[in-house]
Amino acid sequence: MILVAVGRVDRPGAGHRCGVRVGITAVRRLRFDDGTPVTAASGIAPLGDGWLVAQDDATHAAWQRPDGVARLRLLPPVEGLDRFSEAAGTKHLKPDLEVACPVEADGLPGVLLLGSGSAARRTRGVLVTLDGDRPDVRAADLAPLYGAVAERLGVPVAQLNLEGASRAGDVLRWYQRGNLAAGVANAGVEVPLEALVAVLLGRAGAGTVPLGAAHVLELGEVAGVGLAVTDAIALPDGRELLAAAAEDTPNPVDDGPVVATALVLADGGRVLDVTPLPEVDGQVVKVEGLALRGTDGAAVHLVAVVDADDPELPSPQVDLTVTPG
Image (cartoon, rainbow, N blue to C red; front, side):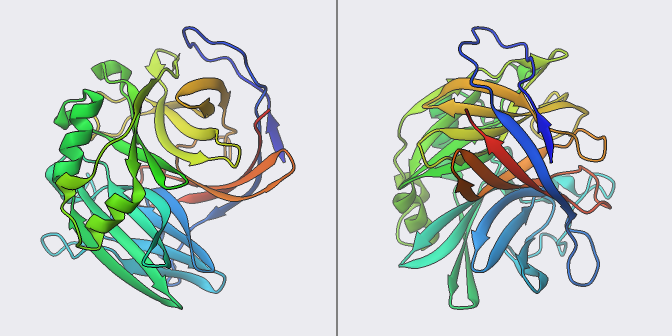
């Protein structure tokens, strides 16, 4: 295990530091059963006896189970395409599913997936439920909800970049990935899960989902690049762990160099600690998905997925052990 102690991040107003420790216990490269890579992993949530991994550059997810990794279609092809990339000139077509969160619907376990919201194609939600061993997939346009979230957070629609979420009981804490260069803050808003799931089930309109409390997070910067939320997970004690990346990009669409990544301990919107994430194979990795594997005393065991921002590389899946302090 690689252990990393608290690092220094330029964060104004930093208060008590809790001494969070992070260790990597395993690294895997995700591939489908046919050998092709799982790319641009952007979210992960438990589904049945395995994990559902969202890909932000595709219309299908990866369902990782003990006996293999299968494709699960989430959305129909876009202009005949199921994968998208900047090199192919098709990046603007991708649904950009960035959030994967465990939910229940009509008594069945499931996963809610949500787009980033920065363009019309990215304001869709997908609900996957599992009846026995059979997945059922439903999708809905959530544009009115995205508009309401942008207004609540005070973010221009073109700068909306909802990349992470955690589940706290019956509430989804949905996070805007900030951008220091564009003057956009990291911020979160609470959404009642039951109301949101009802939209995906076709029982309500997207404009009927009420929004709860909102808050801003100051995560600081590294080498002049602001740290920004890429995902979140709620802890059993009510606090949260948030993955964050300092990616040098001027907008929510273009990729840029990632100069640092961190794990943030927060409580009710209050930042308690910012700790560097360990490198993988000597590289800074952008963790875009977090899920809880379990706890052992004070230790929290997470599974994370990494977006390598390369359509040819398999996404790393990393097991983390975190001691929040």
